[in-house]
Image: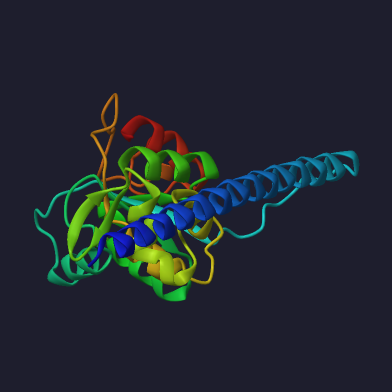
Length: 222
């Protein structure tokens, strides 16, 4: 390759990077406005319901975050295979999951070994920015810059970390690809430990569905 061609390639790459930076900046602004508008609408609906003497019921969640909290002692082989299918191979592994009939059935089978709930935007952002690793050529790569996201998901129009966060939190059309690109999160043992891993959350334990309270646990483990 001649000197001129090398120079042309460098210029083309520089131009592409500049265009990408502008696109990423505009998308981040658009997402911030979208999240802000949603929050304002939620506050308005809650206020309206309160004025009418009722209360606002949140729409059904589309996204779950599941954390494995127990080891393999006395585990049924079927339970073990479901945990592997969910990519929860180790204790304190965490993954996102789309809510549907199949996933709810799977969770029901492994409920004593996991805890789960509905992650908010803050949790999704903090998990991906602090503990996010992507899968490129079967390698576990830290999400240190947007180019890693673009390499893995660019063909789906996901070119930066904010795109990835948006796809996960909204359970977008390429949620499956985005979620499979994300390596299972390796969380730390929660500050203060777990109380009763074998008991259900509603009985004062740790297992099962803790709904919005999953966000408090994510803070302790992130």
